[in-house]
Image (cartoon, rainbow, N blue to C red; front, side):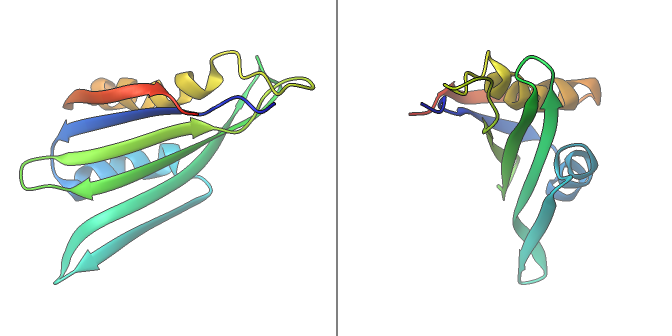
Length: 120
């Protein structure tokens, strides 16, 4: 039984490209993409992973970025990875999703969490 992922929806106060460029090297180590429309960034996606000792495997993260008039919406999901026959995550899915908020905070960005919770 694979453990469900963990989802956090952040509203970040800043510009799309600043936030994307900040997050991409840290959380987009697998793939990253920006979609533009009429010459402006509309949405982006970052796919990444990080090794977690507690589960002895890689834990994946997907970040969808949506450009809003006064903010950027980040839809963050931590998933995959787990230890043992039951693929227990030991909180690694939540931890990787929460790292995004901590990272933004470390760089002085203000944000609110609109929703967070386990998936599935």
